Length: 439
Image (cartoon, rainbow, N blue to C red):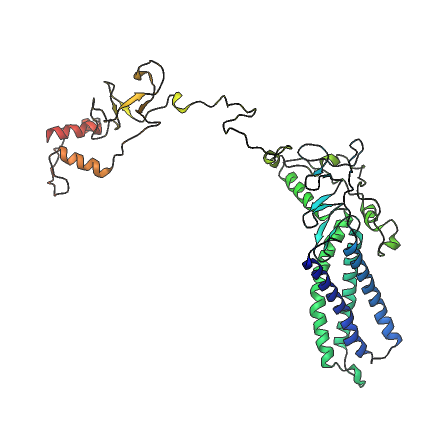
């Protein structure tokens, strides 16, 4: 059994108390008074099957708790020359557990609660405080089966007693104590029957396909990747057919399927279905071609010494200094070589006027600025454009026409042009400059 903490052992004891309460309180406080507190053939015929079911239930539960699910032997290595070994999705080599420092046999997974690799791991069950693996999976399935049958039998007894009509015999009348324990048994048994019943259906269907809970998740992922067209359809290699799937867990004899017997095999190797075409064990579970791009390398991730590396620890040849590439300037160059930050149609644009910034050619050659090289401000690593707000533009315009900014301005009507068709061809900037000179 897994050497768990106090909490795990407490859960096991509470589970035992719940089983015993449902099994024996119904017999002592309900069934025994119902039959007049006297031993009879009818009472034996009623309670003997029920106690046999409860006994098998407790026996299989006890075996599920104390049986070691199976671990990887020390020094075990897979035989890569034989069929039936699984490989790592990334490297293609045998599966290896870095935590346990051991190779992983087929269908083996590492349990974080048990802190070791479990053979044919299905899941870690807190109700048994143990992993469900190769050697106790059969006991666990039988435990679920007997819980379903015993709860069904128990509910039938309680229902018959509750529906029994009182007669002239005094002990047929339901007393207050019986009524309380009937209600308590229904409250305790019905949720257990529903929860364990649904859980049993899942595991019985998994048994038919020889699939563990973890492998069921893997099959769902594979089906999703196939549906999305990422990979081709791959058969599950351990599905041997319903009869052989059951025999691989419960034994070859159907008469002993309900009897707790040891699981066959050592958990290190499993038969595969070789009759299916396109079945490849070394490809299960197949990897996601997209997720594989984000997986770490087998040797692990190591941060390089320099952040500027290119694959083989050298500088990327495609990287070049930013100032070595000519860039298009957002400034307008005038005819005499000066640079203006304003477009030609701006009201403040003047030919031959400089913007007040000192620029230089950032190229290392001796070519002239007119050859298309980028001009940048002296001492800067980029462009610097002086912002032009609407208020600043209006303030400057009012000063140029002789008005005081912030005061009332007289309206000056513009004379109509002689030919509207001619005015339409005049640029807006030239028209504004002409109006300014006239004023």
